[in-house]
Length: 566
Image 1 (cartoon, rainbow, N blue to C red):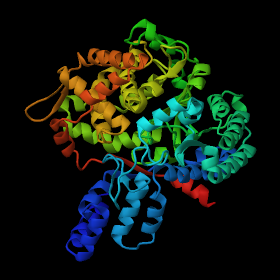
Image 2: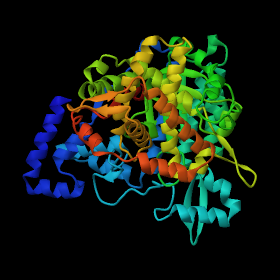
Image 3: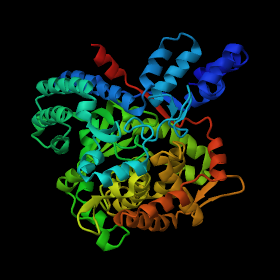
């Protein structure tokens, strides 16, 4: 990376000294040196899986699966912006170094808007609409809500995660994904059906077939239920593959936090690591009972199935591949499925190891008290991520409305939901990891390492940008701990955490967040974000000291590329 970064800086200085460079600067909105610095924030890393560890029958299934996953990427480009793919194709025609650099950066962000800079354009002009391409660009939250109030018959379709909203004269209409992205989804469905025909695993075949049908009908419930049943059949025919494909997360919808983006994870299950973590699934009720919130707000009605999978990533695409990479996830998001079956937690171990090595360790060495640096551990980092995902499945879900009927937390909190939910999962992630230590399921070393590792992790996530859900969630945590004197700086600008008090402080924050969710308190959520979500100067200065530390990784998948060429 060092040689490449140096080359970019040299190119930037040369081009900026010429008329051509000035014209390019006007087009990019940045000078070339700044663009090179931003590109260097993403460390190129090969995410590898030993081909010899994949059973031959799964290799045959992988080829069509990877082609279906590539379609998810194509759809996400369309969801993220109207012109992203066109811009990329134009830049790829250029042979000059700056053109190649711009093409790489557009590909990283899946468009010309920088996800680490509040989606500001780094190429071309014009701001990214808050609602990406899910809504008309001029649509406001007020108009959206007023339309539903005036047309209650449209409510279900408008609030569906799987529709786009468009104008039809003076009316608004909801168009199902199955119609709006029909050509792409039909292609993906065909690849899934081919993959289903090649596997001997009946549970995987069922998921792939029902997901292909969902692409055609826009009804994802049955296939989400089928996904929860993966790896529950006879071991002798169970596939080693763990596959996620379809529309899931709503982060791209900055207007309503409602519309789901397409993505795919094609991974290889680590059976031994996954088995070790299954004891956690039997403790969900105990963890729910231990939540620091009034008993009337505790939720014991969700399904108790909570499989945990540790996997090695073969390929990802779509939403998860844009900008900052996913380390773990908790799916499905459909509250009906969570009520019936629970949710599944999937940890991407090879991705997590790359992030820990390339980002978190250098952050700790730069900012933390040397005595804390010695305690940083991958086990603490990995188990915090695990419990973050487990904690997404805890706490309020379905809420009773005062006038009768029900709603869900995400609908009640609207655009504030993702930031509040990610903050809740982080805080409970720490508390529940410590809970597992005291249950004897994790070693005592994890408890000693958790506070320092968690603190370094806050700065890792803040670098994602404080308008991004994970970034603002960590900003809230930092400001809360700082306000209570739990996190402090010394005269040498070294960062400290009070290891005797941070757990209690996080317990207080968890109570505040869980109560906001349980009461569907939109105004309370808004106040929390406004009060604790901004970045103080001391954090800006600390981030400036991390300028040479990669913010995240840019993964490359050699095995997937080879299989797709075969």
